Length: 447
Picture 1: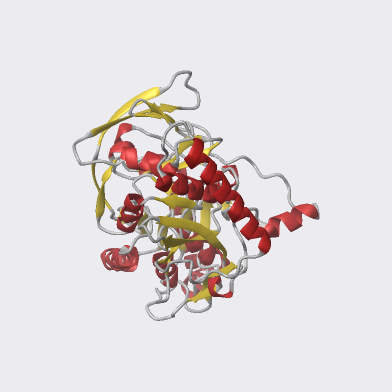
Picture 2: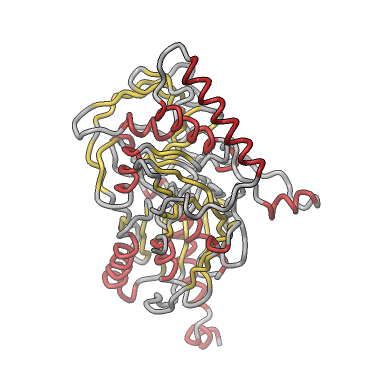
C-alpha cells in the first residue's frame, strides 16, 4: 500500500499534534538492503555490549528496555526530528491529526538541551494561563526536565480533563522559575478561525494543518465573500505560530490559490522519497489581493503554504522570518507495536528553494514589539539540525550575510494593537485605492 504523506513541524506538539510525517506501516526489515561488512561489524559490537550488560549489570536488566533505549539513542543521534515511540506513544501519535485530545495545549522543542515552548495553542489552558513562546520548561510535576525527551514530556503533560499539572518555567528577564498549575481540558482540533477585523477585509487564521483544515478553510472563504459581497477588498491569511501539520492539508490550502504547477516537492536519498505535488486547478479562488502573516513560530506545513504563495506571487508575506523546518519524516511501525520517526527527505518550494534552517523571509518585515519576551526557537537553534546545502554553498562563496537573530512576536488579542495585522489591512486597502486610481473612470475625471 502506498504510504500516506504528511509533513511534520520541526517541533513536537505538546498537545501531541502530529505534524509532517510520512506514515508507513510496513516493517522496514523486508525492504532493507544488504548490509555491508562494516555494518555487520557494528551489529556484532552492539550484540557484544548488550551481552555484557545483561550478564554483568548490578541488577537483572529488562532486555526490551535495553533494546528500545538503544534504538532511541540511535535515532536521537541523527537529527532533532528522528525519534523512537513506545507502543503507547505510537497510538497517541495516530490520534494527533483528528478529533480531540486532553492536555494543556502547547508546542515544545528542545533548545540547548532544555524543553522550550515554541508557542501556546490558541484558546487552550496553557494560552489562558499566560505561557509564552520562548519559556523554558525546567520542571514538570516536580521532576527536572533535564535529559527528558519531547515524547516523555508530552506523556506527562497530557491527562484527563479536569486534572492538574504543574510546570515550572524560566522566562527571559526573570531571575527565578515561575510555577504554573494548569487544569487540563479537552483540546478540540479546530484549526481554522474567522474573525471580523474590517468591513472590507477578510481574516482567516489557520492554527495548524489537520485532517479537516482544507474543508474548514474553503467554508471560511465562502462565508467571508458572501458576507462582504462587493465590499470585499482582500484576504489576510494568518499563519503566525502555526507549527505545521498534514502535508496534504497544506497542499489543499495552497491549491485554493494556485491554478497550475508544483506546490511542493520532496527529495530524498531513495527514488521513492521523491515526489512532486501539483496544483489541480479545479476549485481555484478568484483573483483577489492576499496578505499572509508569518513569524518565527510558522513552521513546516505553514511554510509550504507561505512559500508556494510567495513563489507564485499570489500573496505578499508580512511579519518576520519563519521557523525553517524543511525536512520530511517517515513513521515506521515496528513488530512490537512501537514506532520510529525517521527523517527521509527534504522539501522544496515551487521555485526549488530549500528553507531548511533558514526559513522564509517575508516581503515586508514588521515586528510586534509589544509584549516581547525574547527570540523564537528556530530550526537552526536545534542541536543536530540538518544543514541547508543551498545556503552552505552560497556561504562557501561568501554570498550570504549573517542573519539577524529571530525575534519573538507577541500577538495581541486586540487587533488594533497587532502591528502586523494592521499593516496587512492598511496595505490591502492601499492596493484597492491604487486600483481605483488606475481605473478608466478615474482617468476620465483627471482629464
